[in-house]
Amino acid sequence: MMSISRRTAAAGVTLAAGAMLLTACTSSDGTETTSSSDGSAGGAKVELRVATFPPGADAAAYEAFATQEAQFEDANPDIDVIGVEYEWTGPTFAVQLAGGSLPDVFTVPFTDSKTLLENGQLMDVTDEIDALGYTDSFNPVILDGVTGADGHIYGFPRQAYAMGLHYNRDLFEQAGLDPDDPPATWDEVREAAKAITEATGKAGYAQMAINNTGGWQLTAQTVSRGGRTQVDDGDGTYTSTINNAGTKATLEFLHDLRWVDDSFGYKVDLDWGTINQEFAAGNVGMFTSGSDVYTALVRDFGMEAGDYGLTVMPLEGEDPGTLGGGDIAVVSPTVDDATKAAAIKWIDWYYMQKLMNEDAAVADAQALADAGQAVGTPVLPVLSRELYEESQTWIADYVNVPVDQMAPFTDRIWDQTPVGEPKGKTQEIYALLDPLVQAVLTDENADIDALLTQADADAQALLDQ
Image (cartoon, rainbow, N blue to C red; front, side):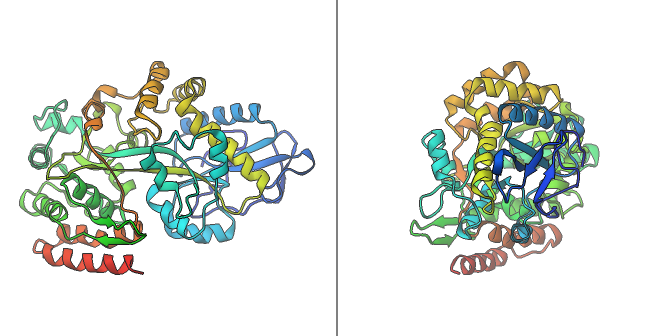
């Protein structure tokens, strides 16, 4: 962890291993600050602990954050912001919540938000969002991800993504493939993967398979083939539909890459972080993940920008779509009213204003660009498409990502139907699906039909709990 900002915590705090909240401390300028458990009594500053980046982020990321932190504190002198290293770790969330080591403001994936809502582990921010005038501005599909059964809103959708096919342009060229004309069908993906492996010896294609990411990507590719792994019954219950043609086709596709074409490579235990690492190092030709991963690939994993390519997910079947997701900015449910008010100011300033205010968007883009951070990575708008496209004109002078290399995605994504992630027991069922992916990658004779039948029954049992 690097301590670059005035108040960025240097203790290497993460969600999985954090420091306890302080009761009082002295800031770098000698001003007494009050903890998030005491609020701002007697005119003292409110100390606000906010999530920054995962462990391992480079110095430039923290330089950009330091600039933004200073700007916020200049506009809000009664708030003392402390940046905290942060990475969402779902299995340890309850422990960290009970132990008091959560930042006051942090982010949560859409897929986890429903579970946290059901458990009463997120702060209600309905009144604050209404007061800011944002309620009617959000994309309704995205807002649903932070709305509880009581109709209240429990977070600010801050970014969204659609699934995409990421590819290494250099490996494409070495294999005699045109990087400006990436695969448009799953059959073409298979052909390209085989060509890459034969020409370079590298894995032509790779897939996440562990830590719930195998189930996540199996679901994404099921959707792209016209299948669905779950049906919302509309009455608070869900029906598992894992045993469908799209999921079966995806597992058969992975099996054939691994055992027929020998184009999958030997690493069958990758998750989000390790597949990014392998891809950034030039060891993988293609993989599927969220469209917003470019920033992490370049900033955190050292990928050469010129090697990166992005296109839309291939679609086939009768009702194909593109799985979408994202994350929300939330307030810890343990903070007091003064800290909650400060947290809302920070979320609005740091996350929301740049989406809808030209001056804020330009200031944010300039701070990121000046620190060498990515500006212009493809995302899905959490607000309207019109406002998103207008915001891109505001920051055009600061865009520093290879937009031409992402054109196969940005030119076509609006023609694809977005599909939200399954709502019922999302992460538990993703975990349940991991072994299916692992099975076809490690056992040439895996019985796919039997695997699907058992997974469907196991998933329904979870949903019926």
